[in-house]
Each structure stands twice: as structure tokens, then as C-alpha cells.
Image (cartoon, rainbow, N blue to C red; front, side, top):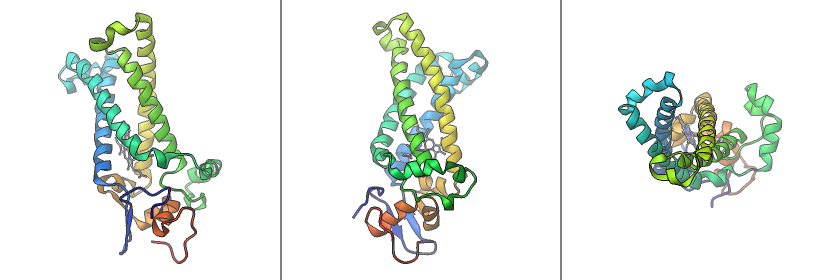
Amino acid sequence: MKGGEVASGDAIHRGDPVIVDRYKVDARINHWLTAGSFVLLALSGLALFHPSLYFLTGLFGGGSWTRAIHPWLGTFLFIGYLGLFIRFWKYNLWTPTDGTWLAKLHVFLRGHEEDMPEVGRYNFAQKCVFWSMTAFILVMIGTGLVIWEQYFAAYTTVDQKRLAVLVHSMCAIVMICIVIVHVYGALWARGTLTAMLKGRVTGGWAWRHHRKWLRELATGKSDQTPRGTPAE
Ligand code: HEM
């Protein structure tokens, strides 16, 4: 039976070490296509952002190609993120534990994760990245369509386009910062990258970082205190 934190495909495999399946192959392909399109999107966007970064257009075959490709990359990212959103939104919903976790953020930042409340599939910080990314992608696609001259030039005024360019570029900078935080988090918690690369983590990783998720997976019940020794 699946609990609220457990996704289809999550499973525990006995052994030394215990292995826990966290992402199915389709979720990983979805994630890496989205991540790849984001990197290309950021590079092509920065190339158009400031003359000092114009040299980046060389990566895309020159200025005209960069301008033509960028909105399509954005469309691709939007569809890719929509896939991630559909897969993961329910595990990113706010729970009372998130409030307790946030109140003890200073403990987490000092590196004492063992003194934090038990976390489900995602912790408060991961949920913040998820929802802020969702909001910014919506703003980016909306403003991006307004300034996509080739197809939508006739639908908005020059003033609306000016405002859209401003919002689009400012939000892009914030989004790049959010992704840097996301990547930093993935590298900082050792063993996390394996989750997205191979789809699995060790029992020790799950016990340390997402104990509530592991408990649910082991018992099949939400908020159940397990009997016996945890998976190491
Ligand atoms: C470019 C380098 C990136 C790396 C190295 C990376 C790495 C990871 C890793 C390791 C996880 C698994 C975290 C866990 O299971 O606890 C993850 C999850 C995720 N990533 Fe990325 N990622 C990258 C880029 C992106 C981008 C650009 C986006 C979106 C635009 C994104 C969206 C997500 C989402 C939605 C999840 C699921 C977490 C959640 O729902 O809160 N990632 N990523």
C-alpha cells in the first residue's frame, strides 16, 4: 500500500547496503531533458541579454540562430517542466512538518540534520525550489510569448512588450540563481545525484535525509512509527 509521500516505483531492496528506488527511468529522462534545455536556454538568453555576452551566440550558430532557437527552447522547457510538475506536485504540498523544519532552519544550516524533524519525500527547501520554479516558469512563458515577435507581434502594444522584456530578463536572473541553489543542494547532500542519475539511493541516505518517506515506504502507512531497527 502506498502512503502520501511514496511515489509509484519507490521500493526498498534488502542487502548491504539497503537500496531504495526513488525515480523511475521516465522521470529521470524527463528531469534531464528539462535540465538540459534550461542550460541551453540560460546560455542563449544570456547571449541576448547583454552585448558583453554576445560571444555566447557562437554556441548556437550566430545571433540570428540564437534568437530563433531561444523561444523554442523555452517552449521545450515549459513542456518538460509541466511533466515534472504533474509527477511531483503532490509530494511538494505543504505539511505541518515544513513549518517545524523552517523554524529549525538554523540547526540545518549548522549541519545538524540529525536534530531536524523527520522529512517526507522532499524537505521544505526543496519544496520552495519546486514552487518558485513553477511560478517563474509561468511568468517566463507568459512574458516570452509577448516578446516572440515572429508569431505574436500583432497581439500586444510596444509598451506591453517593453514591460514584458524587463520582467522576462529579471525573472531569468532569479531563475538562474534558483537553479544554482538546486544544483548546490543536489551536490551538498552526498548521494543525492545518484537518485537522479541511477534512480536509487542507499537506505542510509533515505534514513538521514527523508526518514518519513522511508518509514512510509517500509510500513505502507503514513506517519507510522516503525518497530525494529531502521535501514542503514
Ligand atoms: C542542471 C543541473 C541539475 C542538477 C544537477 C539537478 C539535480 C537534481 C537531483 C539530484 C534531484 C533529486 C533530488 C532528490 O531526490 O532529493 C533533482 C530533482 C528535481 N529537479 Fe533537478 N537538477 C538540475 C536541474 C534542474 C532544472 C533546470 C529543473 C527545472 C527547471 C529541475 C527540476 C527538478 C525537480 C522538479 C526535481 C524534483 C524535486 C521536487 O519535486 O521538489 N532540475 N534534481
